[in-house]
Length: 407
Ligand SMILES: Cc1ncc(COP(=O)(O)O)c(C=O)c1O
Image 1 (cartoon, rainbow, N blue to C red):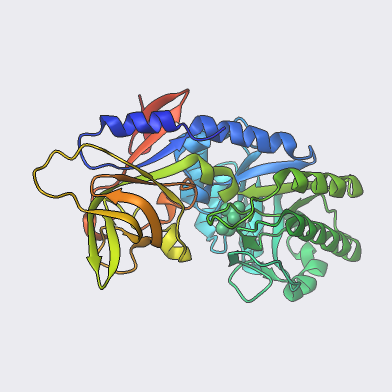
Image 2 (image 1 turned 90 degrees about the horizontal axis):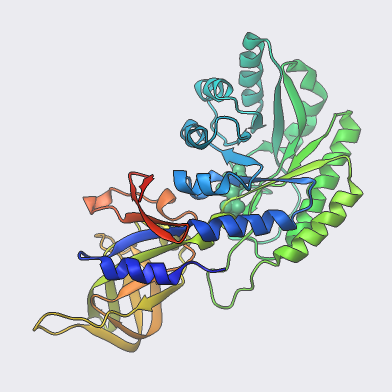
């Protein structure tokens, strides 16, 4: 299944103003998630990391297929609770304050991923006040080597997780926190890994290490969250992550550790492909011998390409009507830099990419824009209008009013 290009064309045909929109195909998203979950061993619980795309419509589309949602703020907890009062929530993030932890308990969060001893102390204190025990995993920043990936959150000095050496000192003292039930460990060490074999080997290493700690410190280990971090291909030379092979390797791992539950919390791999970002070309010009296309939109809506300094994949949707008597600027069979409308040279979405033809008023459709697109961007810099937010559901186009979908 692919995103519904016929409906995208219909949407473009109906626009009377300059086109600037994110379109998320929820039919594609649901079917993609179902396919992923069907391949995972039953010993693996699949959470969706909502930071990748936390739109209500996206969460609602995923709800029937995921085990739960991974969140990192009170705002994200509220977004999940707006679609379900009781779906499991795992609460992570390096900055959990006492008021956030309190709200999380009020809102029936079932699992906490704790990232420092202070977080253990805070949660233990709140749980004691309520006369309860709270389930948690300890997020580890391990000292072992990791495969290369676009972002690395652990295995090196970062703000994430409990340093493995500190963990070794903490594990014998868990009885200092009697209101916490430490049921396992959480590892989210990298993002955008495209190598299924290396990813599976890493997960096996997590599990072996966690089991070794459990034996050494006599822990009642039941659960290991192996994080997200599965990549999508943004460049033509890259090879897709082999999810089927990954699941086979996970199945072998599960057979070796039948007493454990594993959890994953992917973001990008779940929602990237369901979204496209459409931008109309507002101008084309040459400067210092290079072609530039200026777009209605840019990094204030879609920060991923400038943040990662990559050329984001796109296709050109040609529009043949040019109703003016003045000339239509064009770039034909040349390399063009696609820029946004912001007053900064950093506002670049693809640099010096050769196009067959690109003219003012044509549309550039950025693909794989459903994860870490709108949700990581600085929307109001320069106060341009926001893009339209459009969803495809049951083969119908739905326009969003402030993230609430209407037909
Ligand atoms: C703790 C945690 N879990 C899961 C994810 C999702 O990662 P990805 O989108 O690479 O799968 C992130 C992303 O930063 C994260 O910080």
